[in-house]
Length: 369
Image (tube, rainbow, N blue to C red; front, side, top):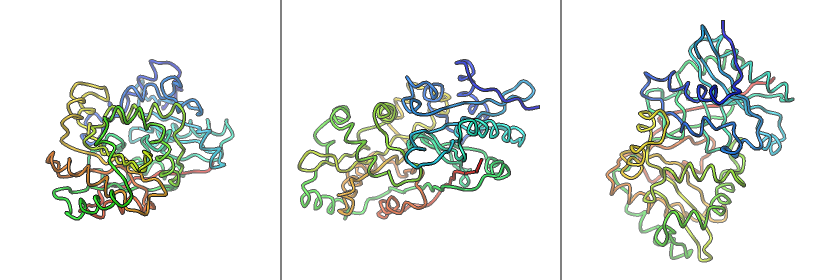
């Protein structure tokens, strides 16, 4: 018999955060989230996103053992923006037992009904920098820092529970053995023509964050607002996101383009892969993590954004020029992207200068209550 328990204590929350590491203990493809982020996800003093969300977490027990977990997030800010009454499925992990998965889903669905929600969908996180989507293809590849891995049976359980596909993403592998010689020439021409310059040539990353943090999120929000279920990152939420990225950014793989008015018009972030260190540490920060950031062996393409009034000018070439010079110098020959909506043709166009191939797909699912 399966018993569903609502998480109400810190001890239970620790079990909630640790369960995936137990479930995937023999799986070399699973990469844990940062433990501190997970154990504090319902704490508005630690997770500022929680200030405008109603959240409940549940654990499933069978024969006295934890066999699944799920979180239900009522994102009041998103519901107001999109004029919807929806509850989000998040942190959904379980053994291959449909009684377990169905009872976990039922717990979130009932929570949604109690709050007047009419639709349930997911897996979604708190915002677009959180892990989202269910892996549906590419099970033979390790996850990245920013993405979840799940067993192939997950999708079958959701479909059998009456869910239908909603949003879909693809992930790619970019080969970087060489850079098109025309890129540097074009970047120089764009710099002179539009009076643009690289911020990292004149300031430290720490100074950039202090000077341009708010402007960075203004550009980010403008660029990503058209994506499915996107919610602007505002106020204190910026601290959460910036601390997550600042922890793992190596300035060699970061680019920020300024115009003649010292305004931020574009940015690009490629992060060192810390997947292996997270696997070893079960999501805890360690000295090995700091070494992986300073001397990366693998890289992940995290974000690229260009202010709307500069998007038709080819400014992303300047970002590619700076970052990929450092990638080539480091000897890293491949970069894995994080999920891109299949409908987002603009972001795919950024990789037209490189040899790349699709390696993973993921989806979210939706159901009426």
